[in-house]
Every structure is written in structure tokens, then in C-alpha cells.
Length: 184
Image 1 (tube, rainbow, N blue to C red):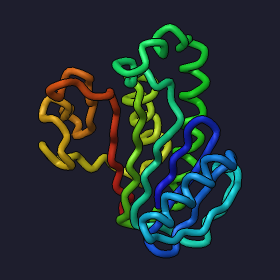
Image 2 (image 1 turned 30 degrees about the vertical axis):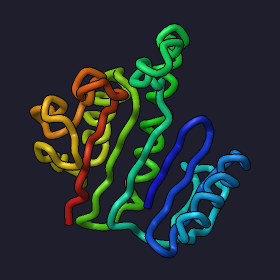
Image 3 (image 1 turned 90 degrees about the vertical axis):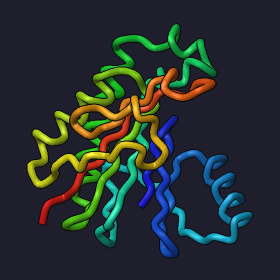
């Protein structure tokens, strides 16, 4: 299951019988075109991500949550001028709601990966701490050095990733990534 929730849209894909969410018709149209181009199929559903009831539990869920996008300042310097503390607080509340809504959709021994393109601790480390406090059925599953091509400097002591723009030759966007494992 892939949940991309940004700029007011929510999509997810889960193997051959995936579901796709979206509230922006243009994004769903582009998604359909990309799937067709790649020879893939997925059902699409427009729904409130915090209220939708999944018909199945999933072994893996990727939540690409809406965020302040401060990690994209290398390509979009204006984002640093546009981000206000109140916006970050509001986004952090939305991220927590989405994490809480996503948790019940993860099967036992399944994984929930949370990511944002933000450099703000409230949207990264703060979400991880809050989620673990609210959901004792999950533990952090550390990301191994070099796993997924992540720069070595990005690995944090707790096993999460904090990718900073200078961690890759030539620069990269900043991200925060945490992987949670649902216990038995």
C-alpha cells in the first residue's frame, strides 16, 4: 500500500489489486496515464484518508505525508520564506492524524514507513516519538547503513534517516524517513 498525501491528495498502490486515493482529479488522471504507460493496473478511490476503511490489512504501507517541504529548498528556495510556524504546527497535526489512521491498516509483523520532505523536527523526529507513544504495538525497525541507497551520513542513531541536502554529491532534497514494525 502506498499512501501519498500531499497538496490535498492521497494515493496508494498495493501490488496488482492496489487502491489509489485522490481528491485532485488532475493528479488521478496523471496517475492513470503513468500506470497505463508502465502496463500496471490499480483501482482508484477518492476518499478522506482518515476515514476510509481498508477492506484488507497490508504487509507494508508507505505514508508519504503532506509537509512543509522545507527539504526542497535547494530547488525551491521560496519554500523557506513561505513556511510559517503555524503552518508547521498544522501540518504536524495532520501528519499525526494520518499516522493514527494508517496504523490499523498494517497487518501483524507488517511495516509502516513514514516519510516527509521536511527538515523540521516537528514533522520528523517529533512524529516518530509521538506515534510510538500512542501506538505501543509498533517499534522502530532501524534502517541499515546504505539501505535503499541512503547516504551514510543520513543514518541517525535510532535507525531513522535524516537526509540533508549536503549528504549527496551535487546535493539532494532533504527528507526524514522512519520505518515502524507492527509487533505480533
